[in-house]
Image (tube, rainbow, N blue to C red; front, top):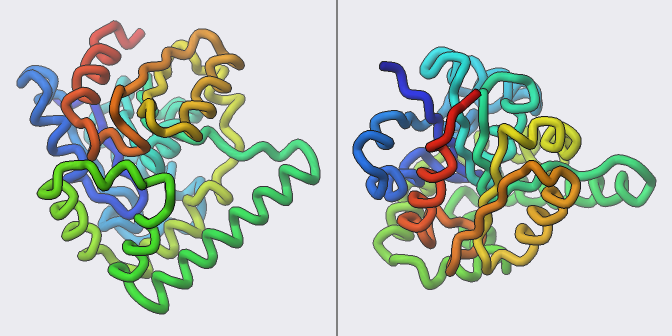
Length: 255
């Protein structure tokens, strides 16, 4: 039987980010899962646009899983999973640490998007000028990732080694085409498919807890689960707890 769970990693990550989650699942659940490398992350050449990225991942999902798949994504992977859900390429989505999009309703919103685009351009320049190792050190120093210092050292080392092997140009192009500034505002799409989506967030990730609660306020049918003791990346910081939560979320019917 073809797998029906597709696991999508975050920016500058690889499919091995899911290893500890899959290992914590019962064998019957793990057997349903497949992982994909995102475009620009050894999953083919960098995308030319957000739409190109989502279309390419959608084609991969269709080939591996068919039309009734559940996309389970973290961060960038969660945003791509939401893009898949919005276009009807998956039946359900579990969105871990997701930002559903920047608004575009007024001049302040447009200014915020422009500022984010400028930030992404600076990160892309760092990748091109100094390579993945220097980029990763600066990227991980952001306050968003501070809680990861308490994660299992061996797990962090495996992640770092896998990241160091990625192509800096592929990551730079991914930022420019798949970054939050390049992504459309999908908050409305999330609300429209609220019955087919669930949000997961670490309780120590204050920014994304706020985003998740705002999404639920807009669409009360959205299910929200909180991973206790985790920051932004539960796949790294609390994979066993995340595995239990996701297993519960995917246990129900898909239609």
